[in-house]
Amino acid sequence: MAGTTEGGCLCGKVRYTLATAPECYGACHCGMCRKFSGGIELGLEVPPGGITWTGEENIGTFSSSEWAERGFCKLCGSSLYWKLTAEGPMQGLLSLSAGSLDSLEGLTFNNEVYVDHMQGDHAFADNDKRNRMTEADVMAMVAAGGEAH
Image (cartoon, rainbow, N blue to C red; front, side, top):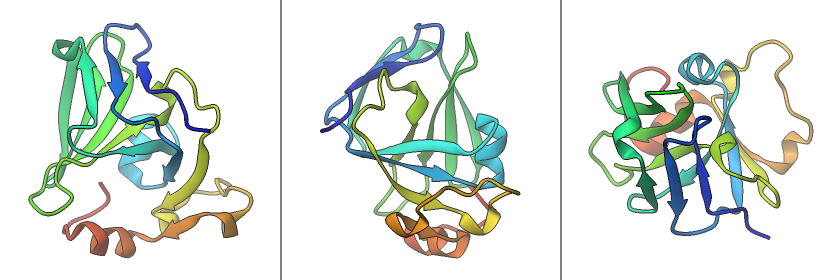
């Protein structure tokens, strides 16, 4: 069963529709995601062109590194996404904040990145059921330099 295709920010001034219903989501333990989300960031991959926004004028962006930006609602502050801006085959890939979906029902937790940056007791159960990647694994995958996204 796939999840919903709609979501938005806390105040409702930014809404979106996904072209394809997501089936899974993942977690990121990097320092920037912790600061952006207030904890472990839960997100789902959306390919370029896979999302249609309503209220896009209310989205603010912040260049969090030389190769990525983060989007948030300028009115309520809700975290909306992380997007790869660096040139390359994955340019434009969006990690949509999973909590912004209207429902996570039916989605599978299948991916965990920056596991070498995990803080304290923030480990999830059933690690053998997910793809787990270190910072080096992620950097190699996106062919980007620098620190955590």
